[in-house]
Structures are given as C-alpha cells and as structure tokens.
Length: 161
Image (tube, rainbow, N blue to C red; front, side, top):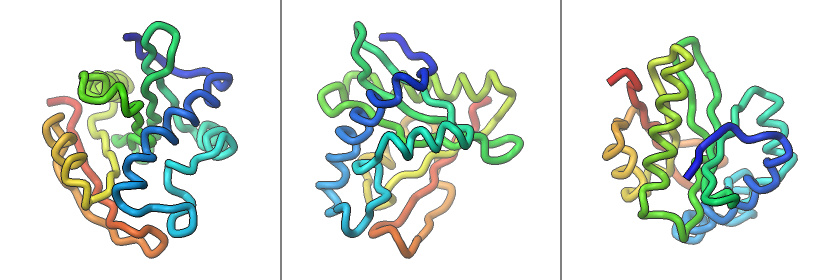
C-alpha cells in the first residue's frame, strides 16, 4: 500500500471512496440527503474542489493502482490541523488501512511543525470513537449543531507523543 498526496485530477476517485465509506454511517444513523445534505455520503466533486481551493490537502492510499482510502488535512490554527473526510472503502476495513492512513496523517502534520491533530466524528458512534482512542486520540469536546441530526464529537491527538 502506498499513501501519497492526491492530484486535482484524482479528486473524482476520492468522491467515490468518500461516498462509499460514509454510506455505512449514513445507513446506521438514519442520515439522508433530506435531513443532512452536507454529510460526506452525499459529497460532490464541486465541494471537494472548493475544499482544495480553501487549502485542504488531500491524500490517498493506493493498493496496486486502486484508491482504497483518502483523507484531507486542513490547518485551522498555528499549531492545529483538522483531519477531514477520513474514508476507507468498506471492503478494505479491519486490515489496518485506516490505522496506516492515520499514522501517515500524524507524521505529515508533525513534519509541518504542528503538534495537534483534531478529528470530528459522530459522537454516538462508539465504534468510531473507540477506534480513534485506540489510535492515540482523546475526546476533546462535543458539539450539538442545529443542522446536524447527531452530536459531533471532536477528538484530539498530540502528534509529538
């Protein structure tokens, strides 16, 4: 498996991976395009391209020449990056792909001189929350946002440790 920065030309592949990855979450939590149109399971290429223009750095994991996972990093404060759209194809989960991508993201942030990496996840998803905790993150805060049909948990990791 190879993990690297994605080119703009590879963003359409990323849309497919994100949609497939987040579809399982949407089904599990009753998320629809009507009650949460901005959920990642409904992401568009336009939205990804706009995120890239705003400064998101997109990365992908490839097995042979197939994109099997992707994520984005965004600098939000002097010493903080946010992990966005962390996605692994459902049939590639549970084989360490996500952990390798997360480790890559931590190392990438550390190499940029930043010490904190935050990630948001559906707070009610105990499985996802536990996975982040197993990989060095701790629960930082919980947000209740009016336009989301779930609570958003913010997980945080000190990448120097």
